[in-house]
Amino acid sequence: MDFALSEEQEAIFDMATAFGEAEIAPHAQVWEREGTIPKDLWPKLAELGFGGLYVSEENGGSGLSRLDATLVFEALSQSCASVAAFLSIHNMCAKMLDNYASAELRDRYLPRALTMETFFSYCLTEPGSGSDAAALKTRAERTNEGYVMNGTKAFISGGGYSDAYIVMARTGEDGPRGISSIIVDDGAEGLSFGGLEDKMGWRSQPTRQVQFDDCKVPAGNLLGEEGKGFRYAMAGLDGGRLNIAACSLGAAQAALDATLTYMGERKAFGQPIDQFQALQFRLAEMEIELQAARTFLRQAAWKLDENHPDATKFCAMAKKHVTEVGSRVADQCLQLHGGYGYLADYGIEKIVRDLRVHQILEGTNEIMRLIVARQMLAERG
Ligand SMILES: Cc1cc2nc3c(=O)[nH]c(=O)nc-3n(C[C@H](O)[C@H](O)[C@H](O)COP(=O)(O)OP(=O)(O)OC[C@H]3O[C@@H](n4cnc5c(N)ncnc54)[C@H](O)[C@@H]3O)c2cc1C
Image (cartoon, rainbow, N blue to C red; front, top):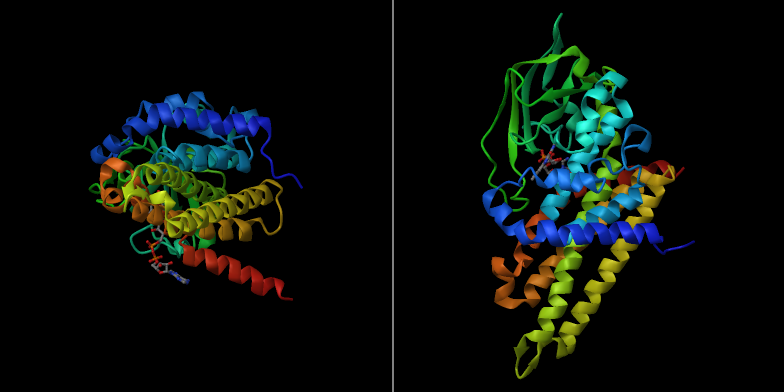
């Protein structure tokens, strides 16, 4: 058993950290105020191979392992979790193209997804179905010309911003087997968007409803086979959960690093506040929690890379645990900054706000518990 990162993995982490410090951190607060991320950021990230982190090399991607990818998200989140998490969604979509698209569809979309000239959104949630995603109602009727889509997707990261959408829509019976994944291009007839959602965190990512009103989609935009869309959508989620957990980890680590520095500078009662043993113990608790979370996350990523039978359970456990630790640590860091932690200039309140949603999406942390408990009951024999 070897817990060390390889030299290559260290290099990936350092490269992503350096990119974040130079290209993301200086702008993160402006982007959150403006409610959008400039599109010219993405090709720069793509030059590092981050447009298709775990897309196979054979199809032009970086061919990294899931563990390697968590390093990228952890590193970038030290600069901004919202930007890093947005990149994770695009990568989830790129991997769906890599795995399931026909050669024709792949050739049409994947190269520009990898260079990030085409930014992708993932459309599963609807106003009436979130956790119970298989109850979705958006319908894609097959006609002679292709599909005609009707329905609404809710909470779509990149809605009205992305260049293309992977939409999970019903082409058949009720339940998961009646769902297909279909690519809808921005500008398609009948595609429109709701207003910008006013959110607690992830404010630099535009979130909108995505609406289909007799939206016409060519038949060739079907991803893989009809009726398998729900399986495709779920297959990406183990890795997506690792990515989101990594985003919590990186941002919480950045908060802790800043807090350690701040506590050496801030004085109260005639001494730096890092001299109060009660506060030193809190630093120690946070360090222990984050290191344990990191080890757990990397173990789960390793299980997924190894196709281990309990990989899904470990991804769910890690997502639940790491996102909760990340939020706890960020909140404590705000507290240790006193009133200054509450001010935007210090960057800590943004981390607290950004990380909160990680307990809600990619499957809520209640659903993570459900996955773990079901597996435990099944294994009980
Ligand atoms: C900022 C943001 C961005 C998002 N981006 C996207 C995106 O890009 N694409 C996309 O498809 N979706 C996206 N989502 C949607 C997200 O995945 C859903 O919000 C999430 O899955 C929860 O669904 P819901 O909001 O409908 O809550 P519900 O499913 O209505 O859940 C409400 C509460 O009930 C609990 N609950 C539900 N069922 C159970 C159960 N069986 N047992 C125990 N507890 C249960 C939940 O955990 C939760 O606490 C985004 C959401 C947000 C907030």
